[in-house]
Image (cartoon, rainbow, N blue to C red; front, side):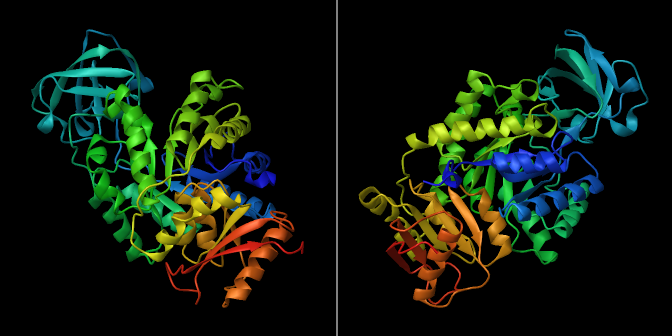
Length: 477
């Protein structure tokens, strides 16, 4: 089978100072990066615009789609500015938390940008800072001052994140910064927008309304699951979003770390059942920020996420600021290639009662008997390819689409190789000819290969898949 089909799991790499050059981006794509994550918690608009330009230009040069994922910062609670940028917290001593407006540099005091803490806090409540590395327990509240005992000390730096696991914090789904960032992202032509700290389905609906108001109703929305409230409301959230990220960083702070593995499996399973793309993220190859090889535990973590059914695995600091960004992508590709032969097709009841799901249910049975070379899905919206890939067939799915947006967005979906075609084809015979032509010209198939074609006639009808055809490639073109 051609090497382009070597691994089906998609690789998301965060672009940052370590990976923003033309040479490194080119190497990342060749190593297997499918999705470039633009983290809007960091970087200037000028930096992001330059990266977008490079990604689009290099992807076109290499004739390969790259999905641009804009990751909004969301309503993250943070520590304010501290004297000299940091203070030392000593285990057993006390720290007073105050609103930003009340902080005057007092000793043993820090400000946080959540104005309702004194109103909502209660003695015994835990406050976690810097991904849980620093831990406090509320002891008393006096006016706007929240006095805490330091349970786990260390160096507290300005702008570190704050988690309040027991509170359903009163923060908007989108901040003013998120709205400004999204306006910029839409102007830059990003392919998917991810919403951080989703708690309920209304958060996704808020973002979708914002997109509709700006003429971008078709923009896919990815919900980051990193709050216990999101886990509790998972089914409602999945009914509204177009993709999901298992954001294990904040999730592992908000809930007990030992609960994260089963929550990860629960989320992936629920997404698989609905043919919703899902990314597993955070600390996948954390040691490769500093070292050229991962730990055995990290390799096992990646492998298990793939076996769970994740569509994509993601690099954060490894590719953004690490010393080995390209090697990190290569390692993910190697793990995926090694693990995927042991994946089993997914057999679950169709998520919807329609022709596309019904025909897709037959894919694995046909593949088992005939050992298909690949499955070709003609799709205008991406629906047919996503549903076909959702069955996790052994044969790769080649998605032919005339829509550039769909071409880029499908690159997040497990097992799908998108190909952009010049125009819609309007007859059954033309579909078959187009499939043969595209596969042979790109050296994805050759004479004698058996393929399966999914499509709809007449063309151009959303979710209009109504035929499935076995075809043997007649000749090289």
